[in-house]
Image (cartoon, rainbow, N blue to C red):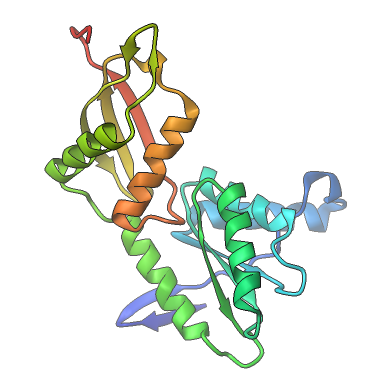
Length: 220
């Protein structure tokens, strides 16, 4: 289905939900699963619609994981307008804990149509953020600040240094960061850097690809 949002053409693709592999039985379910995964691979944004009565299920989180691996930006929609703010906060906390790309959680009502138009506008804005380019000077000032406020890990008296960074791609954002020694990188600190990038440039729900490149000829 094609619609127009703020003068831009947007293609909507409705897919069957993804199930756990162990629950996929029969050729119909199998091919529906494949079509859904391929649609995600081609999409700019995946909108994961959840029944607010059931909450975010493991199958919904699986869709988020598939989208992240495909480089697709993601948002989660609770299909019930009168869900309490406390329930929304609990859902956001669970999603942030389970999904590395920290997708936004919003509400709408498919029955009444409330907030559906706003939802599509949010998805378009999310695609735009995934396609933005961060100027290299801004990125390197940011890397310097991160190292000052949260020092990188060290081992045997040798500390990881982020020497220079540049964005090399968009949708999803792709960064190359020169470092003194890749062996000093630990997963928790790498995740911390990703989340700081998301906080700085509004990239919640956007997969980030960071390549750590050892600088040749340096032994810092």
